[in-house]
Each structure stands twice: as C-alpha cells, then as structure tokens.
Image (tube, helix red, strand yellow):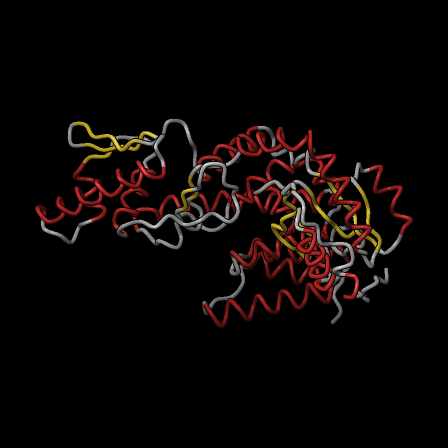
Length: 407
C-alpha cells in the first residue's frame, strides 16, 4: 500500500481554535508514520478538547498502553505493517468495549469495514482541521453518556502502589501511566515501607527489620534509625494514604492496607488464574503483562527483594513466551515476532527466545532475518559472556538452515 505523506501545514489552524468550554478527553494515536502522528497531535492540541496520552508507531505498542491505562478514543491508521488497524481494532474492543475508535486512512474504501467494527468515525488523509472538528463534536456527544461508567470500570482495575521497576504511590484516581513519584524524607524510610509491603500485611519483628535494613549499625543506633523511619512513614501515610496504617504490637510491625492492592499482587493473581483456566483469554493476559514495567523494585536494588524479583521475572518470561508460542500455533507469526523482539530486549541472552524467533522467521519465510538474528545472538553471547548458544538452539538453527536458509 502506498500511503499519502504530503501534509499541508497551512491547514493546521484552519478552524481548530475553540475558546469555549471544553470536555477533556484522553486519546492515543497509532500510525507507523511519525510525521502523521506529529501532524494529528498538533491538530488535536490546537482544538484543545482532547489530551494525547501517547503516540505509537506500531499497533502492539498502542495495545500495551491500553492494557495499562484506558483512554476514551484511539485514532489509528488502517494501513500498517505487522498488525493493521482493523485487526488492532478487534483487540481494542476485547480489551474495553467503551473505547471509541477513529480510523485514519488514505483510502475511502475502508469506510464500510471501519463502521462494521463500530468505529466512531474515519478520517481521510491528509486530515483537514474542519473535518477533524466535526469528528470531535461527534465524539463529545457520544461520550457524554458512556464516559462515566467506563471510568468507574477502569479505576477498579488500577493498583494503589506499583512495585515493578520502582516503588510508586499513585494519587487517588490517578491512571497507571504517568504517576508522580512520592518524595520520601530518607531512602531508609522508603526501603522500610517497601520491606513491610513486601511481607504483604504479615507481622514483621523488630529484629528482622534491623537485620535487613541496618545490619552494619550497633543495636542502639540501628533502633534509633528504625524509630525515625517509622515516624517518617506514619507522617507520609497521614498525608498521602490515610486508608493505610502502620501498626505495632509485641515488638512487631505491619502495614494494614485496608484492601488496596499493588501491581505485583494483580500480576501474580492474574497469572495464576490464567494458568488455571488453561491459558486462555489473550486480551486478559495482555493487560497482566503490561503491568510488568520492569523487574520487581529493580531501580532500588534491595538485596532482600532478589528472590521475589527472580520469581516474578520467571513468571513473566514463561507467560510471554507461551503467548508467543500460541501466536505461532494460530498462524500469527508476525505478532509473535514483535512480541519476541520486545521480550528479547529484557532477556537478550535467552536461548528460548532466540529459538522461538528463529521458528517465527522461518514460518514467515524470512530466512535471511533468521540467519542474521542467530549470527547476532552468537556474537552477543561470545562478546559479553564468553559462551556459545545451547546445543538445542544451535541444532534448531542448523535444521532450519539445511531446510530453508540460503548457504
């Protein structure tokens, strides 16, 4: 498909500026052409009724955003590689039927199919400001009744505290993307809060806290640091999390969270339910994987968190790899490749991921890509670890090369 890219900047301000009362809406933009994303964002900014929460050049990246944070509208190009806009719209509807879709396309023949997918509207490229304004008027009218219920559903699914990658406390009603970091008085008060949160509401003895957080200090000095950190946490909870109490009894402490959950708890619970149900429901598991922003408390590097970090990391890798295998089994090799490439960024030395990528490339008939990927993997292992790929990975490559790859 040849896509139109000649954008006329003279139309940006044509009819866009509206000074009256506005209904603030959230949207993401998906188009494999960065110039198209920038152009549409500027049109929307000029109108002012809509906040762009993210711009993505692949449908999968947009779906990852929606799995973590719901929006009101998705503007999506139809003609994209990997996963086109019509296919992505099916996934969006499964993730949340309240999300409205506006297709952007260079070809009007897509209009009928777009409306069969319950798109709110479609825009022809190059997008004109007056046409966009009509679309936004229609969106405002349509969301007037549907938006409140959608917000309630989304809010119930959000964690209060995030522990993947770093510790973050979310404001009430705040979305899962763009959290403002809470500034702790000291790093030790932050670590103590994390440690108590790590024990999931269980009572933790004073001795255990002192050994874990202040092992290098004399007992008297360590106790002073503990009491100081306890005071700082209680003060922070009073200001930021009034539904949470730091309780003390018989030389033991615990966090009483009054029912709220963390992203880690949502992830563990969801993965267990998904596995017990026979690993079905792709949109559900996509939303769980999106919670995994990074390794558990990775940026803080707490020694006591290492074991749980490895456990959660293995859960994530196993689940994401199984999802990639399912995509291969169902003939969605292109989606599998994209997922595996993203996964490889987290785990560059994984033989399992390398083998799956080789299989996916072969299924797509992209034998040169398979060969280049394997050679790059071999070089990475040799240069950075001084090792070779596992025998099973090498044998798979030899088998594929013998059958399909050029010499």
